[in-house]
Image 1 (cartoon, protein in one colour):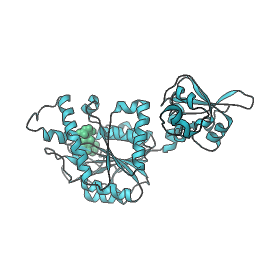
Image 2: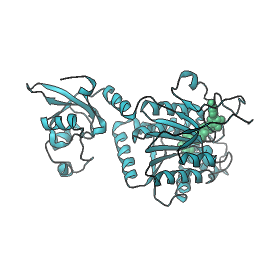
Image 3: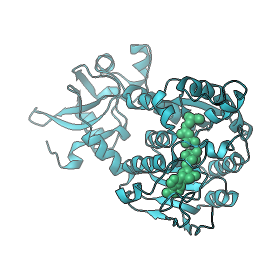
Image 4: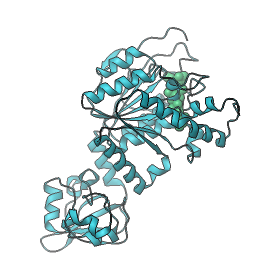
Amino acid sequence: MTQLRKFRQQTVPPWRRAVLKVGSSLLAADSGGLSTRFALGLAQFISSCHASGREIVLVSSGAVAAGRMLLQDHSPEDTSNAARQAMAALGQTQTVALWQRLFDRPLAQVLLTHDDLRDRRRYLNARATLTELLRYNVLPVVNENDTVAVDELTLGDNDNLAAIVAALIDADMLLIATDIDGLYTADPRSNPDAEPIDEVHELTAEIMTMAGAAGSSVGTGGMRTKLEAAEKAAAAGIQTILFNGRDGEVVSLLARDLLHGTLLRTTATRMQARKYWLLHVPAVPGCIHVDAGAVRAISDEGASLLPKGIIDAVGDFQRGDMVEIVGDSCSGEPYVVARGITQYGAAEMNQIAGSHTRDIKERLGYSYGENVVHRDDLVITTDFGVNP
Ligand SMILES: Nc1ncnc2c1ncn2[C@@H]1O[C@H](COP(=O)(O)OP(=O)(O)O)[C@@H](O)[C@H]1O
Ligand SMILES: N[C@@H](CCC(=O)OP(=O)(O)O)C(=O)O
């Protein structure tokens, strides 16, 4: 590549919880298996963020590249889905082992598919697991569950997966480490005149057309999936950073909140984006009928909805559904107080209605936690001018 113009230095906006996506291009050399060469600097970056009280979920590719190396003598040219899936299954253990070597705290392997995250119940389970792991100070290492994710494996889309995980865990930053300094006006590997783009305020169609395919034989999505990921993150109020994970200097500066790469901003705050989403996802038929104490707690005190304040559940909604929460006005008329994603289905809710949170497990035989609707999953309708 000819000498390209460099990215300028800029300060990274403050963040507390991030998803760091590391592409195959950083973990596997073009023809070889996995190497710690670039992973080491990224692991130091994670540890330094962790030491300053920040949380990171790692989304790591590299399984197919690692597995391909192990199977070299068998079927190096076989690129059928079954072969790639076998490679991914073989290589996944190597990927996690590579990262574990670089940390003295425990790692947890989390394999997800896009389908899992489209299913609301599984979405809640994945979120609860990841949040719990962060609470234990464990580093979650996420990859696609390639064994079952045929479409995703074909597209190789950990960039989009990372964006969905960022929204899932309510991150405030998506960090994408790749083998190029950032976004250019065109793929610099084929366009020597490409100019660096330090900052993107809006992902317009013009910007999207700048993105080309992967630059190495191990990378799969190229810049296109990175911009799609940034678009998804922005819709959830999350900013994205694209940076070169091969450049040790860039990585260590990033640990000091100095960026040489592309910052993709978002206009919506996380809360605005989330509330907007909560208000516009269609609610299923049925509702949660609550007492006056619960109405006060959720609308005036910003509390989560607990079983104690529930009178009954109407309809047959399921855990993970968007439901309306209904109270009684002074004249006894029911009105919609709020809407939110429920942690319990209607049948379960009728069993725990009015009870203390500590009794949930005894009544049901299991528990999804003390909140029936968590405050982060709840939006008060009066906030949006829908008065009773
Ligand atoms: N406009 C662009 N700006 C920067 N890189 C681009 C652009 N279009 C395509 N690319 C290519 O995207 C590659 C990074 O994507 P990819 O190979 O999939 O890496 P990873 O394995 O990190 O996901 C770069 O090496 C580069 O060749
Ligand atoms: N899940 C697969 C590939 C996923 C993928 O998106 O790869 P990349 O474009 O290098 O981030 C793997 O671990 O090899």
